[in-house]
Length: 237
Image 1 (cartoon, rainbow, N blue to C red):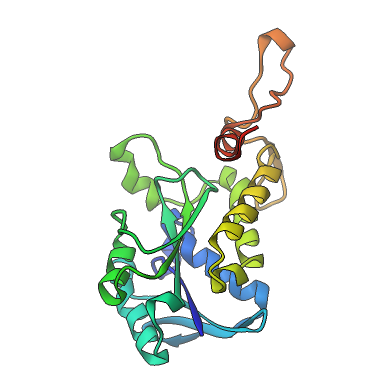
Image 2: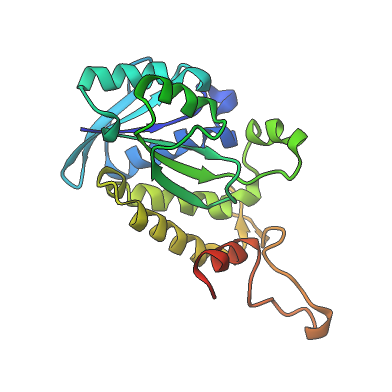
């Protein structure tokens, strides 16, 4: 079995928080692949099934973020797994919104959930870090992380979660390069699309996605916004 863990905080008041993107990701994986149903187990919510023929367990710890390792450790011991059999998905404030980094091992990066998991498993588990962006000032970090995603974030958040779910087999196969590449391609396709809120109303491109020049009469900048800039930095023009 390969265990995919999404980190977050339980309860409705936390459901939309940026800190809960790990929960959102595994919810999308379970739905996309028809896993489940969710059931209470290992001090969390657990679902299992198969993804492309491989047996997979999916876990949302309900111990609150700082004690996530209690839940993950219980599942790992029950199934007699090694750290190499575990992938943890979580938020990363030091990555641009919509960016993804996948690796095995490393430090905790100051993330309390990862610190707790590492205390139980050691460092050698896979990490899928999902960028939520930085608010720009240190004093704003707490409110940013423990604040809800804005409507404007849906332009990248929904395709990110969908792409991650569709390619969950790459987590099981530990194919980090292909997983990151497929997410980057999906993000490139939506980087210049307008924002559509949950009611279906189009509110226009998100702030910073479209720039205008007085010299060209307000034509759209072909280089796009900050997401396009980020992708150019990664892959060139």
